[in-house]
Figure (spheres, helix red, strand yellow):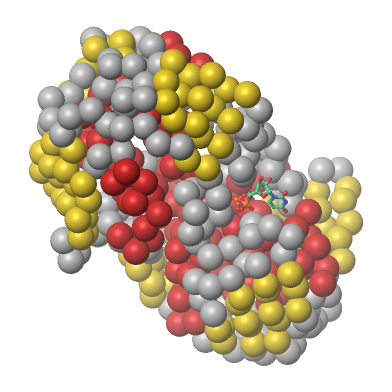
Length: 420
Ligand code: EPU
């Protein structure tokens, strides 16, 4: 609920274990992929987040139903009666609604989709999605806020993306599985969530080479030859990083069960530079922090670089670190809005264009703050753990979109935090 707030008091060192949930930015795309073939799908390790509910509403309107099971899995049923129209009221609620475009285009040959809007951190164009889909035979018309796409039969070709866009890679990939011939996507995004999507598409009968690399080769299959599949959602590296950051600013020793070190390699190295010790436990990570963090300079980049979604957490850690850190945002120039909120907590941060200079202070001081988006909201909660007195975070509905019981999980490792 919009009126909900999270109340945080400075934490003693954190101890215990957190089970890291599945990734929002994977599950939403896997759900959209169920449009590709009739049948009953079971996705497990699904995070209990609001965006999953919103995506299920959108897919229900198009023709795929979702049942939420007690074991944290969802069952999705595609009976083949697909209406390839994504209306404004549903699309505007969630950016990932754009991911229905590729599957619907390949399967139905036409789609009418409300244009997705921007985010609080800036405009988010879809020109690369459209250009890539055009290259494999789609045509587009923009009318009354809708994009109408058509394609008699998509055909494979070579596409080089100007930039490794996550969404564009996913849309071209999910359209190309039904194209005639081979599509090569060069400079593809290689986030673990895209490799996860490739894995599910492959179990559905798609023929994809190069999953997880920057060249994806998709050999198209005949429409009608894909089938439903069961798939576990990859663990969320951003939620995992949030608990790492919580321990980093509070001190303590916590095991993150399910966290995948190989998906967070660059981040873990930079956390080590800041003085956080992270070791692999076989089925997760053990994190240990003690004493003041050291400042570092960081620039965000597409995977395997430091993700833009980690940045609010890093800025929060730098706010209480020893020294000065320069943070450069290379993906969304406007993604520094939460800085004003951190300043309310006593952080010493100056922004200039896409740079932020963070001078660490020994202690933050609690205050009321507002979450402007999902990741910034989680970072403000982490900041509250490092602040004297009480911090009250409002705008919690943003956090609920991407975090599965952030408060409960932090309580489980000893944080003084509650939802009010
Ligand atoms: N871009 C274009 N044209 C396009 C597509 C992208 O100019 O056609 C630009 C964007 O404006 C942006 C950059 O390219 O500056 C990166 O965009 P990308 O397409 O890679 O991102 P996305 O698919 O829209 C996903 C995540 C974001 C995450 C980014 C970057 C989902 C639903 N969203 O967005 O996650 O920040 O990749 O890693 O997967 C979040 O979870 O809070 C979130 C915002």
